[in-house]
Amino acid sequence: MDDIIDGLIVTPAKAKALGHRYVEELSNPKNKKRGISSGIRSLDTVMNPLLPGQLMVVMARPGGGKTSLMMHFVRESAKAWSSRDKKETIPPIAVSAEMAIEEIILRDISHHLPVDSNELSRGTYGDWDMAHKIVDKMYDEFPVIYIGHTLEKTGRRPRMSIENIWKSLAALREKYQMSPELVSIDYVQRLKLDKISRDRRGEVSEITEMCKDLALEYATPVILGSQVGRQVEDRKPPIPTLQDAKETANLEETADVILSLMRPSKYYQVGEKIPGTKDGMMCTEELFYINLIKQRQGVGDKGFWCHFDMAISRLSDLEFVDMNESMY
Image (cartoon, rainbow, N blue to C red; front, side):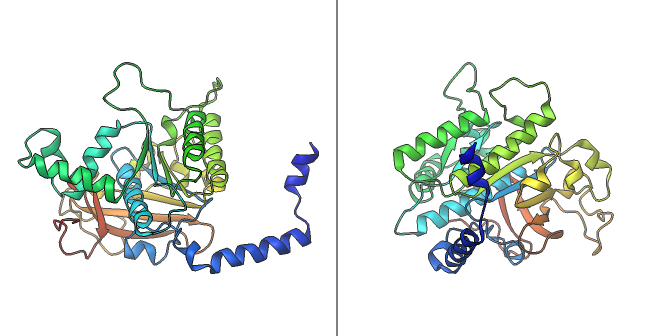
């Protein structure tokens, strides 16, 4: 008990030391490189880089682009990791509690080629040698570590509990003696606790708290996906708010940054004016909306229109010219 109390109390002398240390960390150019940005200029002008120990929550309806945005951050993180000569972290980690790892890899191949992912999944793509080359380039140049189930293993999927995710991260840290560059967890409603609970709402809230603890324990940024309730679809426009967070009551208190997403083409016809938009935006297949609901330091409640090509899982600023330009 004394250790717990001692860990909670911060005296003026300790606060002074913490303040100096934090200022030193913020002013160190090397530490600034650890911050994870989106690579989308309009968003990055307002959203601060995601720092070690911070939790960002990405909220959306099913099919709203949640996984695509999270993997966009993973790719940006992998690029940043690869650009450093001295490695003080291991590559970013993508945790998938829903999609098989091969399905995520297929999206990445599609993104990097670029080619419509349907061509790959249906086996109609015409240059499979190039697909193999892209796989090599992806994981040699921009490596990602995955935690989740594979199609290679038949039978029952491994239990995706938050405790097992912690154990997997602990094993990686023990092996490499370093923490990950980033951890992306897709998504909270698919995770479980090892202990038995009949209160699903309380269980999901506890998992959210544990994800924040994970960010602090491993000194790494964590991105957590969260589904929102169906009621958001009755809103015009149907942009998720904190009140829509499905089974998660404590997102606002726990998360350092919260983004909500909306794909207008899920709700409106192409060419139709999107109700409730100040600038009278017209719906297109590629239009994508990101709302920065909250960030602890800086501006919140600000939205951004982006270009999202779902066929190749590629996000960019709205004014981006050539979405078909190869990554290589």
